[in-house]
Length: 484
Ligand code: ADP
Ligand code: MG
Image (tube, rainbow, N blue to C red):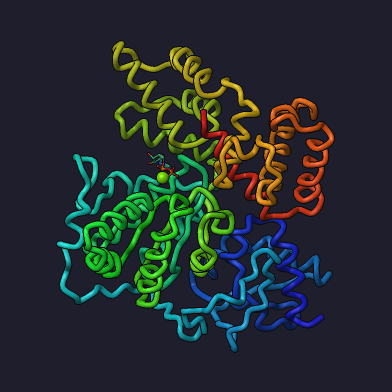
């Protein structure tokens, strides 16, 4: 086996145990530098990856190498070295390989990348006037429209968000240079906006040229600018920043004119090493209504996911927030609340606020018993409301930019087939509904159609392990699990 073959086999082993985003982020552009006398040098593209592999993935890598080569390894050294020739043998899964009709606008030769870690403050005149019209309304946002509470210092790092958090920190320390764009995705209420704004708040210490917008605001501003003959001012505004933060980019789906404008803004900024950070409720590949060329741009930097917090993280968040609110809670209370709020961190905060408020109102100190009483109502409100087939069909339609009517209607259009099958699969998986009932829910279809659809997706996901489809299903599940 050549080193190259060994490494491909090792990557194959590691890939199955990680999320796609993690895998791509940490193993792209890695290769074996040398392998002699049971000692191995693994080359990595930068210090950030080096540190991460050493600290987080060393065991996985060692295990995979030993299993592939069937020999004991004495030592692994991680070394920063860029691959000569620029070509990467990174195994992109079929669905993710880049389309060839995409001109690469950025010189991607690794040697041209500058990994300098110090951020040089721009000497250009500061442009307060650019951002002045972005000032937040009310006292909860600062002059950039950022919530001053959203900072790294009060962001609790745990299993679900450590990758995204580390990536955001790296972006702050190497603005425009480390990962550009940074694309953060994950379900509702898991901290995407918090992280995005934390970048803004940190960078605001070194430059004023920061813009934070939701994609809806970008869209509205653009339409307004075109209407009032101010398209040029609009371009100047967005193309003259050091940092552009766009929240919930998925809402740009289907807005073609806005996407066109955003594409040019994006290119201009990226070419000039100006940092772009985006958030979305799903990975780039799963945004059917966003143009292909934009999706390939979104994937050209780093893609990081935020997942649901584990119980330890939930407890840590509750502890921190209860102290911040001046009402520290006992361990058993923290445990109880963390255990009973399942979906996301926003709900966790909601439960805490409710507990503190109702105790303060009565002038009582929270005990496990009193908290259980309050939480009883709260939990039955958010969790026992049961999911219905209609909600699943709705969420699936929403995900594919279709309507409920499209999915239950009689049209046999090709583009409806897959979404319909997906809805059927999810109803069966989530609710264990019988096939005849599923058929009826989907506009009176035959039970064999329902069964066939279920089996089709089942094969892709459970037998072939199709990652792209798994992620789509996960994104749709997020939509209905947050619809309560
Ligand atoms: P998203 O944008 O993903 O929907 P947000 O960033 O709005 O979620 O987060 C929802 C709430 O939860 C916010 O108040 C945020 O401060 C809080 N939050 C999320 N993740 C964390 C975390 N890891 N540590 C502390 N607070 C968090
Ligand atoms: Mg958000």
